[in-house]
Length: 161
Image (cartoon, helix red, strand yellow):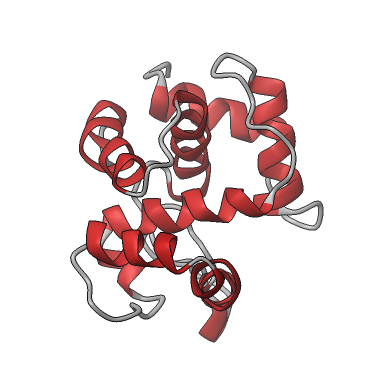
């Protein structure tokens, strides 16, 4: 498990600032996603899913990673360039890079949210954060529940046991 304060300061904030997409709301959504998906970095690869098993601290599926590159980052070459340079790459990384490069995983998680036309939830709006997470990241077919999401946020982000 990665301490939430260090995850914010050393990974999420620099990643989002490096691609000029930092907002406190985006930071909160990413840290909540990490708390839910990997227990703040405890898991780096989904235990099910075969070749499309979710990867990294945000548990992004390789197909989602590739879709982001094939749509958003190839169409917006300036954003694609920012992704590469902020993560010290010259070529498009493979999805498994999200397992060991936390900065890159955070960048890709943030860019995922560019596809969502709904506004980011306010930092203190836990219901909206849950709604967006469930609808777009986990999907209605996913196993996450609001009770589990809020408990993981409280435990891993707020330190409440």
